[in-house]
Image (cartoon, rainbow, N blue to C red; front, side, top):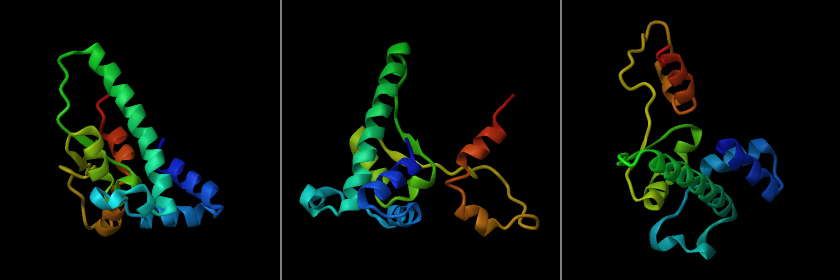
Length: 141
């Protein structure tokens, strides 16, 4: 489950095109705290939170399984990556749900970029969707 699942759910539920749903996803802010009452949420936020709750459930299952395999494991933070990391307040929502800090991963951390050969500003804008690509490129063989 990921960003495309959220976009597809928005498109289907709101009867809009995929590109309209993608735009809406990027513009939606998840409301937290006392303002987060269900009746105060707009329809797109409700759909996004519903998908995120499914993701949270799956992550909890994976973490629980992993913990049963290695009791010495201790989670002290979660790193969020991908395009959905840009949804307003997503890291705070996940931090509340998992009760650990959530940080937005930066695939360029520790990497030097030659400004003479690459458009650094364009690369920075794409950093969230390039995390998997960079990870695969950097892994040890």
